[in-house]
Structures are given as C-alpha cells and as structure tokens.
Image (cartoon, rainbow, N blue to C red; front, side, top):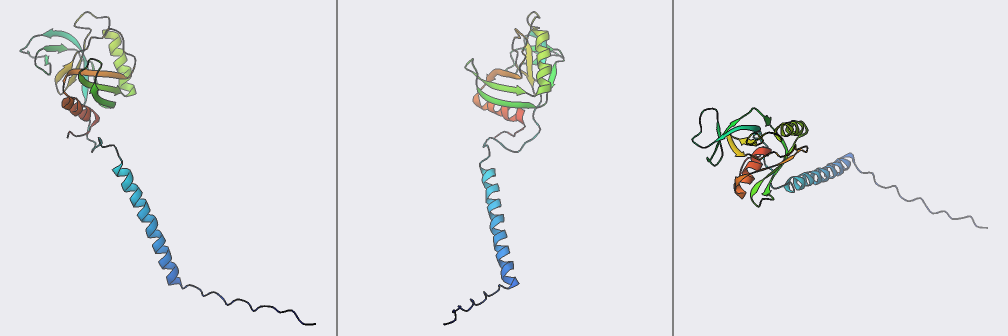
Length: 189
C-alpha cells in the first residue's frame, strides 16, 4: 500500500509593512474627506437663489387710522407712500419678523405682498382687527407703515383670525420684491 500524498502547504503571504498600511489609511481618509467636501459644495450651490446674507428684517407697523386728511401733512400725521394723504394713527403694533413674505400679483391684479405673521404677532393682529371691524370709517382702517410711510390702509370689515395678510399699494414688481427682501432681512439686489 502506498501512503497518501499530501500537498505541501502554500507559502506564507508576505506581510505588508506598517508604512504601507499608513499610506492606505491616508488615501482612504482623503477620498472620504473629498466626498464630504463635494457634497457640502453641492448643497450650498443648490440653495434657493433668492437667499442671500441675512440682515435684520425691516420692522413694520400696523396702526389704526384715527383721521385722514389731504396734504400737506402736519405734525403728528404720517404721509402715504405716494404723498396723496396724511394719517393720524393710533399706537397699534410692530411686526419685527415675518414668518414669510412673498411678492406677487394679488387678487386685485396689482403687485403686492402676501405676508405670514409669526404666532405671537398673529394673535395680536387678530385682537387688533377684532377691535377695528365695528368702527366707523376711517377708524375701521388699519395703516401698514414701513419706513415712516403708510403703504396701504385696508378697511377691516371683519376680524382676521389667521396669520396671513396682504399688503397692497402702488407697487411695481421691483418695489414689491424689494420690500419682500427687506421684510425677510435679505439685502436688495
């Protein structure tokens, strides 16, 4: 009988030196960092083109109209943005930050803004409109004041319970877009 034949064991694999492992780790780490950097750049470049550096938003006031008079405006009155009227206004409220502001064509087929108020301002706005809706004219009007000028004085015919309002006036597309940017704290173009 013959004895079984066993194949010789395979030769041992050469071991990599520690320097080779360091090079592999550095290359792999560099690839991961490069991929993360590329992803971050892609996210930044895909951002909303309307976004820009954020500044302090322009506050605006919502003030009840007490009296309306023709120009020239006297002390204690505020001129309309187009200079055609003067208003004596009650205290009202200041909106320091809007939830959202969008320039666009309003139902009246004129340029304006749709503004969404934040929760605290929406509650104060609802209380203010609830007080005004039953007043006689012009005390049922609410002046929207930006930069010391009355942009619009809508008649409040019923309490407004939501957080959305429209600002209309003598806006062009450019002026409505500019006000949108300012209310959101973005610099103009």
